[in-house]
Picture 1: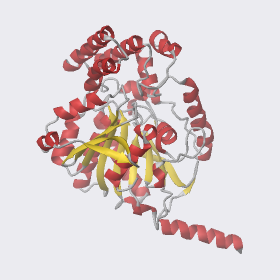
Picture 2: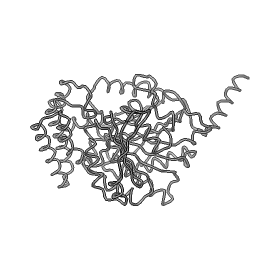
Picture 3: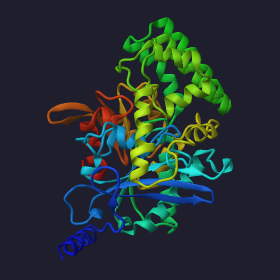
Picture 4: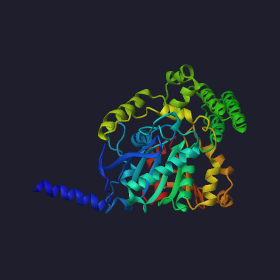
Length: 442
């Protein structure tokens, strides 16, 4: 009898929470996960964490999507265990997990990333538009599985190459909603240390490193010369060649800086590791290791790989090998890698009601803040004049200055102190402020 009572209590709790698909996964709290077929031969994986907040039903709290960069870096792996999920890579609880305040869905995107997979070479994506349309199809499938979230405020957050993917996803999702193809309470998109205008990022490297004293004038000039070669190829729309020249520019940065960390210039680095990047790897390998694996910390990469292919795979009862197709996913997009998405952000601001944000860590190099400021200043949008004239205000959390923000209309820019590329992990206090600005919770 007692067992029946316990089972009934569990069922009643799940009914009250509105989480008909909730189940125990890996780590604390109720979860759900699975695949959505976004096209024939293309299968996208998601991992949903229901909020651990004390709520009557989960759908009362916002739903936040997290998209990783790369392209080919896994949200269910990197974003989850390295940045904002309930558990850290070593298995300890993360104090600043987003799941405490809202529902979080990690999507392995584009197809071929993480646990997502394709049935053959022809099913990979090769451009940003295809990625965006796949994500819209994913949301249709997700809402079919989780109709309780259709009226829940939806917010898209991303990082790095996600700063190209998320704006176009947001735009296509907005238009699909307007056409009546999908029911969703979509409200905002926030781009973290975004690769939205690749060439603006690359052109910012030399002056940024010179001003920090990481390179001298000679080093600056060599980096700038390589960056300008990249720009010439971008201007000529020679996209694959521009991607390869980008990698060569990266190698000049590594050589002249003696191995600065691209994701946080204050991170201690080892000379033998940057020499391995310079000497042992060809441009394609160098790009893949820095963009998909973030760095060449092989020990940490191995820990994550072992976790995802071992305990996580077992707990989620999966048969797919995590990260098996990510290298090909990256290579398929090399011709699209250096193309900008600034015009997409402009269209979001001029033609939709979607709120748009950019947040950037001041210690990031690969998507350095000065580059983001430059492409934002270059945009033509309805509230640009007001934005330029508005003051920048400080972000203070518990009496600590965590950064600055500036806003006009539906757009806000956040400068984040004491943070590199991974703002949620590097400065969770500032990230919580940004979450509150967009979702009302944090």
